[in-house]
Image (tube, rainbow, N blue to C red; front, side, top):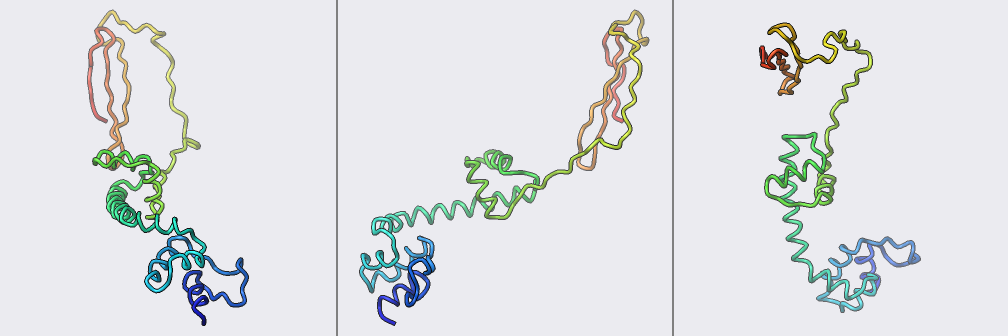
Length: 192
């Protein structure tokens, strides 16, 4: 194997003998730049860049931004740990709600970055099951006995109520407030 074949084999991933340019396997630029850096003490950088089919300026730019890339990778690793800890607590968070949770922790991060990191981690939000009302019995509707007359002459004659649903860990609590229309005062409040 000649020197040129050796370089082609290392930089392009395959031997150059008997293959056209299109048939040769190409590595991504990052790998080619790393290979050029490894071999730069034995061969001229100009020749290595020609063989790897990258510009010399591109190689030097890659080399100059190496510390910034390493710092960004460390920050991304730290951010991934935070994303995983939030995901363990709230697996139904998508990237938008995850970004909001990270901002509450004091980490101002772009939603696109959160989305990319979640994709790298293989995290997807858990879609909550829809609650279709198909097949259920319709609600009981009572006749309108007030006819929009929301005042009463005597106490205890006209009472109105409403129910509030409050989600808790293992289901719902129902809160019902009963109002007396005579003086619009709370007749009773009771959790059901």
